[in-house]
Image (cartoon, rainbow, N blue to C red; front, side, top):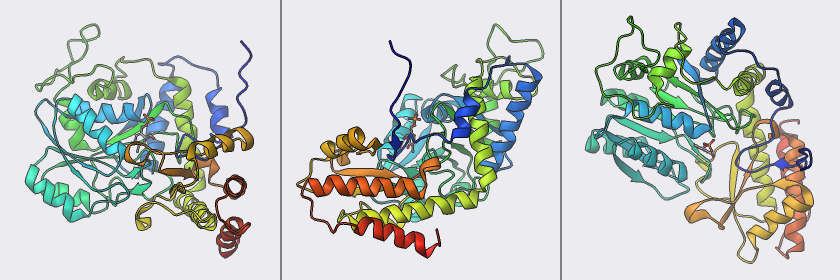
Length: 407
Ligand SMILES: Cc1ncc(COP(=O)(O)O)c(C=O)c1O
């Protein structure tokens, strides 16, 4: 086999995207042992950094090894006991994923749904909470399958009033859209690196409120091979997964450093670098940058005579959906874009598969040149496929947005 030599793609889909070069550099840094004081110091630094990223004081802020769904699964399986009621508002593919993971953990899941392309009002969620009386509300903030951003700021207060735990999956939105763990009264949040944080997938930062941790601690069952006399076992049923047992993972990240898995050191380096990169830029500046390039891309696709998908008032800053014109073969255009221009964009899932393209502007690729290259290349392919458009308008529209912001 040849040496690794992937083509120099520009990843302009819904994620993953190209990594920040400094994050790639961090990943190739030499390993150290998992109890080396330098390593445990890095672990503590990661906790402190992600408290800033999540905007929280939660001491239980750490990494779950695995892709974003590892974070989701750890948060849900560690809380849910068989028969617990969980409410999941579904507005896209990843709501269905929350439902499935909660069901596998033994929950009785009640879903409410809106059409893909829409989001819920706080009233709709409160009505469902009153009806279902769940232990936990689990919902997605930015669902990349529809490009919609669910407003969360009033939901936490509703949950507290009804004594419901509140979990959000902010994998695709954090860093590019506002997110406030403590101000919005969230009990649990999980994310991934491969979207606005500009890293690869493979590490899932999470944060847990004290009341969530309290619940998990009641299910603490230290593994037989490492249990010692001073360990107190929990009174509630053991967590159904060993790998995603947050009671044990918290012990590993806590002062005792009680052995659980072998920490994925390269991914920890990577997650640390993603957080430092975001915080050096400033969370607000990063959100503004995602908003700017998202607006330029939206103006640009309109200039290509493409119709944007969904309720644009609730669009995520970092990804736009556009209807594939009727006479155009969506997959052919995507393939040509990839093969001839080295640019990747996405289609979607379920009811939207083959109906929309999703074009991302996130992390390292929330940049003017990346936006302009993508628009110019799409224009060429659409024009050659006889899609009616005014040549140059996409770039002019995007340039207009940049000129207004003097960029
Ligand atoms: C909102 C959301 N949640 C979860 C996931 C699943 O992430 P992963 O593929 O890293 O497990 C994704 C991936 O696109 C996502 O967009």
